[in-house]
Image (cartoon, rainbow, N blue to C red; front, side, top):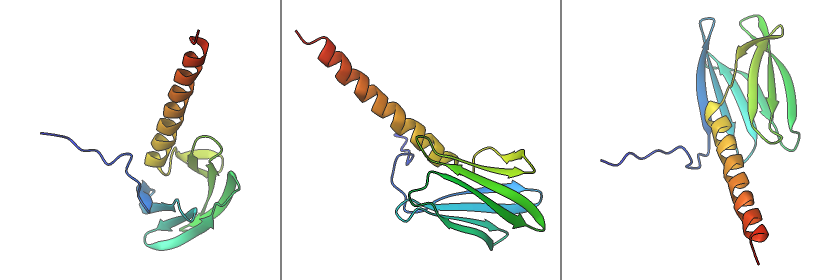
Length: 122
């Protein structure tokens, strides 16, 4: 029996759900348009195009409570949810974070192989 993982398969919309204080928070990201949307109990609380800016900090209100969404995608993807400087959700899109780590690791391995080939060349 072969186990197939769609871990590295391209998905048009990447999404993940979280439970925070009785609220279902759904995060969606579209890599082609760089659009990030955040829904709380089927109500849209955030829609942002990340475009070319690698650092984002956005305040959102979910059921009268203010949260801060911090997104960084310089080298590694990182998206977190804070409430008054307290980390609530460590990673909003864990699959995207894992994929960015995998791609950087792959790139570093290829770079090291090429470097060794150049250094060992007579």
